[in-house]
Image 1 (tube, rainbow, N blue to C red):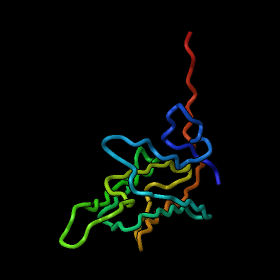
Image 2 (cartoon, helix red, strand yellow; image 1 turned 90 degrees about the vertical axis):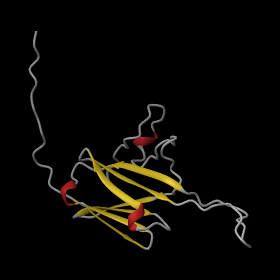
Image 3 (cartoon, rainbow, N blue to C red; image 1 turned 180 degrees about the horizontal axis):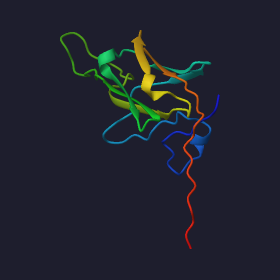
Length: 145
């Protein structure tokens, strides 16, 4: 399995050279409050990504392909109120809520035109078929002067 750099290289750390799934920094707009852990399995036919999204449904999650090489998984988990109800009061809260986003770069041989995703029991499975990478774009640039 080849290691592919993440699009989150901040210039401050070389961690993205070892781990293609480096998490983004938290911003005011999007917080990574959902622990979206990813497993990547490479078969002879495809790259299969399994993402743990416990408690989320299909309509809570969105999968996008950006610039034909980056998978973006985003969504939102509703927050539990810490307010007092009739006879119930939330005493301790560790389960986060809010928006989340994960991005990772696909390998060069990924066929982004045939990506499939399905969600079952809180596990999102993204299947990216492989394609032959025979004809790489190559252009010789003449140097003037």
